[in-house]
Length: 293
Length: 299
Image 1 (cartoon, rainbow over the protein chains, first blue to last red):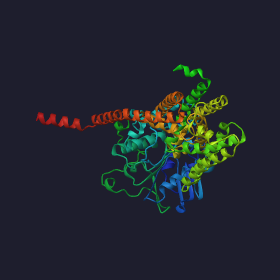
Image 2: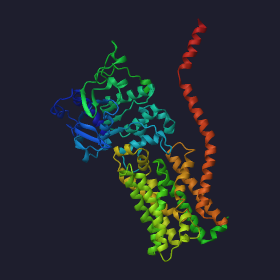
Image 3: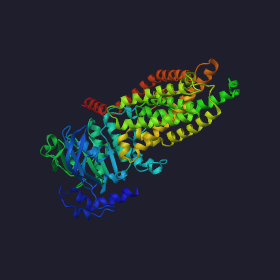
């Protein structure tokens, strides 16, 4: 709890400004951002990363930096390597080359997993044994207290996470009874239960109904406003578009674009649709509080 | 009914039965959750070599079985990690090797015979020795401490291994610990249920419990309750009818499974109906309809 407070107060200031800066800015300015601990450290820094799956090169030397307070979308077609990139960052896929640092620590020596909240791609395969929503979300709290019985603070964090995604009233229901969108919200609550600084989400909007999409966007908006750093794998920008600072587009395992999100099409491209940045002016973006509670 | 407690061998058999009834489902629930329900079966086959090794070396077969089946379980876990494509063949080799090795070794030993082997394959109530009871109690204590004490950690690992790794849990260590605990459970259960039917007692009470439960903790509690009820009643039945206890315990367990499934089906139907009804109430469409009809009635 204390860690979160320092994080929030530290991040709301200069580092957020740094976070929104254009890609390619020198590290020196960020070093002054004054966050306690490791001020200069980018949450994610991937340099020349290569990876192969079953003998086929999937990542062919990608660079990806996510700075503190940034919301970065990783875009690309199926098979472009975006999921592999994210899975290599969280250690599910070994890198065959290049280097990866998390919060300034080489991946091999990184132990501070409580700072990272991971939302894996949702699988439709049902688990063998029933589990309630609360049981699944509580597993996320293990990042903070790996062994030993849960304390009051842990239970409170789980409850908060459930409320954030609007699933508190379903806490005692089995996850197998949920819709795809509700299940996705549970997986995000599980990541949030550990009160992470960096959220890594793999296709959070895939197969999610409209109501859940709006709740997810609202949850994410709150996290970002609270200073969280986010890396999202997305198929398309969709309803999260106004939140995204930077987009990295992969094609055939290479970065082909790193900069502002690609031009939106459809409703977002229509004249009169203001692209308002939520950090700059939170009031400009209508927050539908009714859905968030 | 209580006169069977006058026999010392029955006291030992019933104590062993209770311990089996607790430990087998307590480990089995994690294997079922990880879709490895058959793992107990494999360990059972490998443990047979351990039993035979005990006869050959003149040590208590419970201890040699623990050792060999733990090694076998660790090997299975390593195969799961590294042998992605040929894993099933490697496991098959391990199963058959364990079975064949057991039969081979026991016939080589001076004291062992296929008749001894049968009591280990299908369980026996008369052969649980005082030394066995001590060994079984110690091993069961280890299983209970691990499976209940590390409940949340093992749940996380078995429910979503990928996520568990990112929380920083020592996933490999926990997986190995679970494999060893499963091996220990097999040896706890082999005297009463027998090596060929051990796996059934790990899986069937869990399968029965999850027909009626909604959460993991409830499933665990109910599975252990079912486990204790069937092992105790099966052992008592074996005393009166002189059949191997493993057989009567497993048949009873499957009976409980069928009973709960039959009772739970209408219950689940009603619950699903309730959820659907609740969701119907929450839509705004009815209100809109009511308002518009009211408005049209006014105008």
